[in-house]
Amino acid sequence: MNDVAVPGGDGVFQWLVRVYYEDTDSGGVVYHTSYLRFMERARTEWLRALGFEQDWLRREFGVLFTVRSVRIEFQKPAFFNDQLAVDTWAVHHRRAGLRFAQHIRQVQSGSGEKAVLCRADIEIVCVDSQNLRPRPVPSAIVAELINVG
Image (tube, rainbow, N blue to C red; front, side):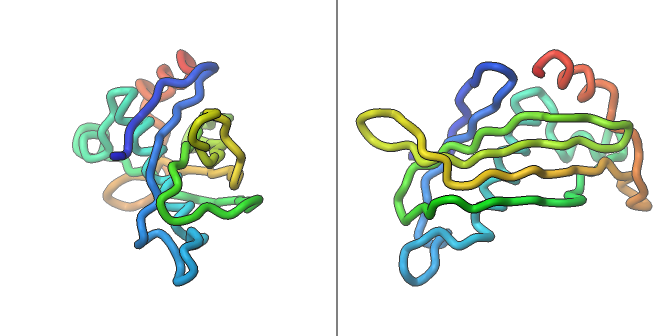
């Protein structure tokens, strides 16, 4: 299965991903940094689904998004070939920052139930693409956040 976006309710964006061997350690357990990559992809795809490509934001608005902080709690392991759902939603926005909550769940075959594997709070800062100093989040993105959440 390829990565795919699934519309979610209540302002939640869901990105489905399959665990590949490269995402795991020698025991076939997902390596802890792989969860961060899955979450990064989900945030990027969430922006894309809202109509904002990151390279376009850099060209048109002169901004980049960078991670300021991550608080992550691992609850259960994921394994090679598991199908995972990465749920992403905006929790808060400030002048130059966004805070997201993200949950990674294991999609179990048959029942469709999803066990939470990890939870994270991610703080993102909008920065100037030239000097990397904080800048306001473009108003178009803020307007979408208000519409979504």
